[in-house]
Length: 305
Image (cartoon, rainbow, N blue to C red):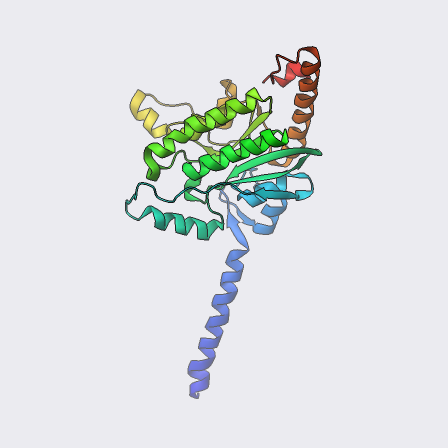
């Protein structure tokens, strides 16, 4: 056996085996139900597990692609405030965390605002990317949300927002908490201008996001089994010293207690929201004719239809 057979061939073989293994690994993913899923099958099924139906997280761009008519949309520019106003450092500098998140998501903040059509109706749509520091809400997110609301008012178009967040950004302290007030004022302005505001809760929607704009929609929809909460279940359990219901903080539990209007599977969001918009806008026109000084969007669409 010469040196080529003994050393070179095994090395070449191992290189190809590693590459093949990596390619194979990138073709598959796992679900919470512990099933192995072919990624292409997951993509074809709206990023929902074909075995258990679990709704996997989406990036903002993936969300827009699935939601808009024909997957056509335009990303709208939003203001970007100064990074790290407090020079925050924990185990890592905040600026480093932002740099990593931007590299990972290829966007400046967790929120993107877009414009397109749903059921041929022009809408402004916002979404959060959980990969960007858990979708945490800070000054940049606040600016993006307000810019989205302003675009909706200027275009006289409904504003739809997909939440996916762990809450306010701890690295921005009171600046992040102030966004709860600012976004609430933006929603109030939408209502004053009679612009429909629809919120779609996705997994997870928690903390300050739940405590502000995410619960202020004219219509509040959720994807199935999404976690909807303010404080974590463990914190609540330790505080009240009681066992919590098995499905506590799920979309289904929240709907049963009156905080959510509808639970809609991802594949049906375009058609369902399109129908809702038709009802809202038609009712809006009727109200303007009947009483132009008192225009409002009712939350209960069942009575409207």
